[in-house]
Length: 456
Image 1 (cartoon, rainbow, N blue to C red):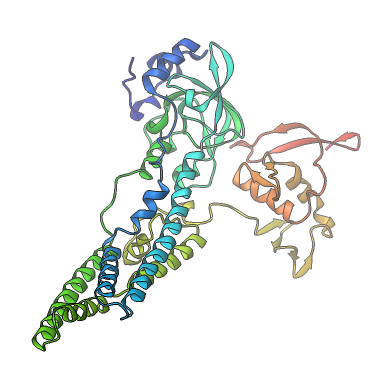
Image 2 (tube, rainbow, N blue to C red):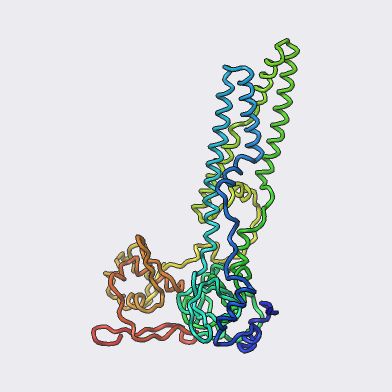
């Protein structure tokens, strides 16, 4: 059993041809067939990044070249103290070890936080999904979804696998996690001509939410074969080469090591020629070598990179390795497409236009023709605010200990957040009795509500 098709033709096929190609039907797979395909294709999961070993990650901070140079310096200091006690070399040795340890703890902590953030990518997919099995809606674990399964899509659900729509009713999805574009995309079950993969209107992708509508879609890619899986693969890619900073540090460390050894040898020779004796000359040479090792270079570099990493974090940029901060600083040209990913990827209400009058929205008030007022006091605009409160399909999800989170169409989310911020939703909205959804011809949405014994 193997499906020989590519993204280049599945969107061009009719629903009947898609089902035939995937060896399934509108009733979905049987439980036995789903189990066989699960064995053949594997579970619908993302490969987790290699388990981050705390011990290995911590020990790694002690093994780069500059740290090794400090280890050698500390060893030489203790050797000199052993050969001639009381010269203070032991204190210097312990100080160098302290520098190594403090630097290792600090660098490990920064990189560990970044590693945890990378793992969060693998928690973006839903844990369970509804599929048709033998024409019966079945709640299954995401990992059990296989090619040929028929997904049941409803408003507010996260899609669990890449799929081709076979039935769609006013479906709109948010693909910003894949494309960076915040505007919802309408989806249809009709065959279409060629287009950019993520913009093809009869395909839906894992990790994207359904903002409105409902439908059914047949799965054609699971796990790491999905578009979301391809993104996840980037977080577990192979090791990269040394950064520009690391290359320079290695170069400087080699130079310092050679100069220190050369100067130590020279002063050892001078000591011997002056008749100081072998052991005294040796201690003298060791002291010169240790003195030339830049003990403060390692913590200075780590601290500078950590500060840069924290500043990037405040700007919502994840730095997985500290040395990447300097690599970004060396970048002279960035080639990118202008998408929502370069902004906050969200909308907010800035102003209204009503009755030939512009209303400016500020944080806690409105400015109408130069007059500052609150939403509650602007009674002449009550019909507008009524529409904002009731005429939308955005949903509020309340989390313990925090304000409600609004999900749905970005435009509707912006309006609901405006209502929340200005105290318009202090009571429950009126019961909805009917709805005319937005369409391209009417270019508007309408809802019917029950108020005071009558429909409004």
